[in-house]
Length: 402
Image (cartoon, rainbow, N blue to C red; front, side):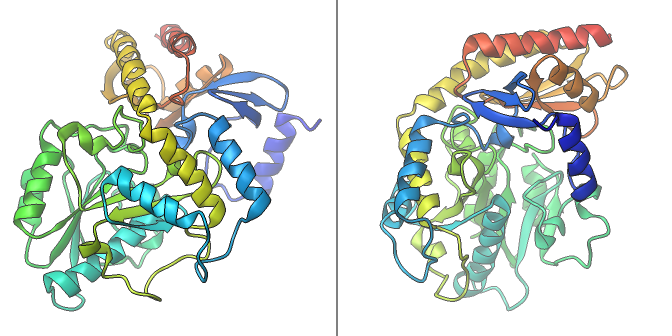
């Protein structure tokens, strides 16, 4: 068997260094646990940034994928296939929207929402050609395509990749007043993460999303909710905007929609918004393919039971209570909602990466972001016992560095 160190050496030598992985090489996984090539087991406390909300190898999702693999994997959208109608109707019902437009990755779904909002602005709102603007937030993360990084405030994502795509106004996250001041006659949309994941699981002030919804309605502007990380059960609701009873004009979905099996993304909106797209104006060879739709259909069935939303709420309350006990004892702040948390380590003690490496050595996989912050997002299938064990490992790591 090739060792972890050998595989890491080859990977570092033969691949671009666009990621900085922890030194673990995973070979197989089931539920909330993964195993490396040497046979050591680790508890996954990251879930592929919410792609694995339903666990590694979820039986219902794997069965759906295996059945579809026997029949049909790809037609392109040149033809209909027998999984497509159910996927569109099911995801439309889950979001409460008339229509969906399927893509593959989250970044593609965000790009799709941007295109649809601009088209809507010209055709429906009557914005002058080439003048449409979209309001976005500081510290956002919506992907790494050239248009998306044009409005990123993260130097790593943004710098030295210009020239940049115009048409965006960046305002302070969590400030409805900043949005109010930025809106003008050319504004076609406000693009917002209900919780900013990559920024460190930042939860906006109570009432913020409600105010954003009201401002968009008052000014005939589309509210676009990027629920790629926050949606599909992670926060204890199907969508994080539900915590404030808000319904956006466009949902942007991805990650968990593919069940950890294949990339599946989509936007969902009513006909008066998505109806502006006509044949030839947008698409993807693999978007809405039979395998993706079969997997997506299984995910939708799982979410329709409400079991995972309730479980994320229950386990999330326990997780956050345990994490709050660490505040003042090596932890500065804990943020989050449901089974999702950002934990700020005292920067005088250690970086987030150092803490993540020590957790890895103890059999827990988490990931740092922005210096001293670590993100915790275990699969929602995790047992309470396993979760408490992992949180105990975190407490011991912090105790050893104090």
